Image (tube, rainbow, N blue to C red; front, side):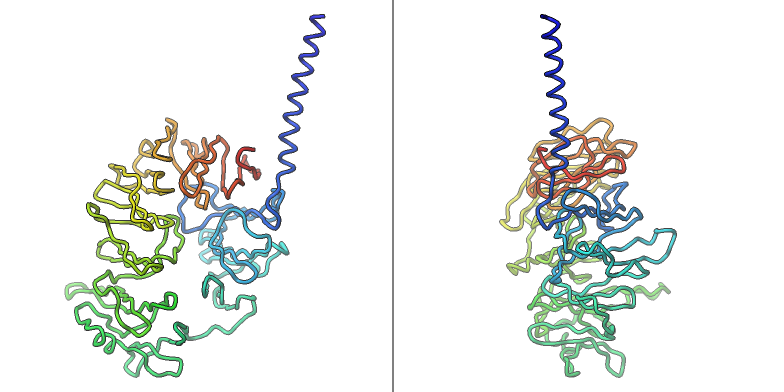
Length: 453
């Protein structure tokens, strides 16, 4: 009787094990992405993520099977929908009819030239085969209007167009272009070739006489929405004792009539702010200074300056309206949308990189020594392993943090939500996350899983 019970017990345990294994396999087979979506895995070249596999690029279908892969170093420059909308996304879920603008770095096969091409996820084929050249894009209201690959130019429908010798800028119902007079001085012209604004008129209009000033006239560099012009030029900063000419840039922000705005702000450079991942955030303008002064920021939605709260001397833009306040070695997370301060902390490091994931979560990616890596989630410091050598950050709406050892292998993965709350923690090598879906790597194999699966 006892032997029969042992056998029955063994069979019962075996049945549960087989059922469990079967359930896992069935779960993998049944996993499907939302209808009409595929999963893109890639990185931006501009972002130093410290990932050994950052040069891999792949697209997975709704069931998690790869439909496109590039093992050689390759990066996503842009993702575009059929109607021309640029997604500003480089990993995670994308529509299955998107177009991928792909480039290679200079180091590929020892070549000094880059290559660029466009792959269609709908037809699973190349629209433009990879060829030598670099992409440049022109967009209007978040949609692609035209692009160039090397010397070739195309409209948003990929029809070849003659590359215009002159760039035209349209704003407030007006069209401008940059021109030069008989003396070689630059000025801004209207579409009918009449002068809209030259340097002398700009200086007199705005009472701007202090040095330095642009030496070769005035140019229009960029329009911002329907409100602002970025104008300026360059000047020679060399001294009498220095035989080398050093040209420095000057930028001014004006309205559509050429009236100077924020006259006392930094003038070395003006442009959309870049977040901690290198992406442009078109809500904020950054006024930079090459003399070491802190940047200044303008909120384009409110028209207000992002002011530094009392007690802080510097601020850096990080993401989604979050800035990092700094005063020597003290830091504080600052939310510009409601002027509130989040977590404060202190570090003795000078060669580190700080990432913000919300008002109460951050990571310090140390370059001073592995022991200085730090991860704080929802005000709680994560106890990193004693063998942790690096923290790698994978950007996205759901950022991924990888904890790794001396051999470069991942030991722990963390997936966060947009506010820095921990959604998932495991010992798998997660390479990207988007909502409940995440991509996990095991050797040379990849699979898509779901949080809690």
